[in-house]
Image (tube, rainbow, N blue to C red):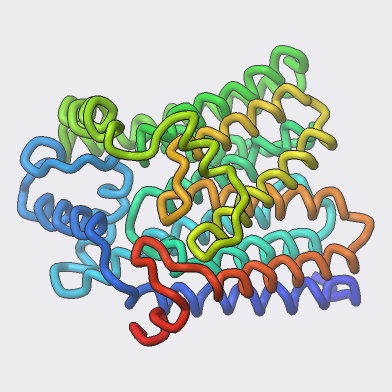
Length: 378
């Protein structure tokens, strides 16, 4: 690849943001523990001793976080539990790769800038919003970003989608309900997008929708086989879906009022990161509808993202929405400003710097620490 003057600034910014992301991930490995993680760690240790998830070991969370943690189990053992936090690092890295290789972009410098914007933004809030934790919200956020970058946004903008991208996007979409059943509506919205576009462009997208469907099928098959071997499918339905919906949903902010609360703008320390996510989502949504060839499909994508806010949280529970909102804004801004590389470079630098500065004034979640307290805690 020939390095031109136009590519130098994006490369430098990409290197800086990637290094910052790596640094924050290393920092996050030693962050404060959280009770949800303990349940996942214990679940993996129990499975290593022959117990079955949702039958012998009961937990309310979805099976995907247990499967990914189980893969790292032989490395972590019982004495290196911090290794389990590589799950969120791995998923965020895969999402970054999906952004880099999306078919939305024409030039290499766009790929570097878009990826730098996203990695730099989430690195700024990595430990502030609990994205470093081994839990379902960073997993769901990464899967959402992969789906957006591989097929949802390219198809809305009538861009070609390669067969590997379509398969990977379908695979990620089908995994969403296994991360948390609350992500199920998002998966339905995302899968409806290629189906709707196919109705109008059957010849163009016949192969694409086949690959997306194949990816969805393979993801469901993998999860079903893993649950059949190491878990209990009936127990998952009972404890993760029915129990959560019947009892737990009554003790958390959930519904229209919670959604409106989560979308309200406020720059108080406990709401500032959520406000940045809402602004990013609003900007990205406007650009997506404006530039989209298929307006209805773009609206379906936005409605899907809004389902991530039904719980209406402004703390660590908004991790999936936060990651998706930053990705939506990064992808659309880069696609729209492809003829203005200098402006886009300034925007990338300013957006990452802005998120970082605002994060310094935010209370961390779920621990509610100020910047001084976070530094004191190491």
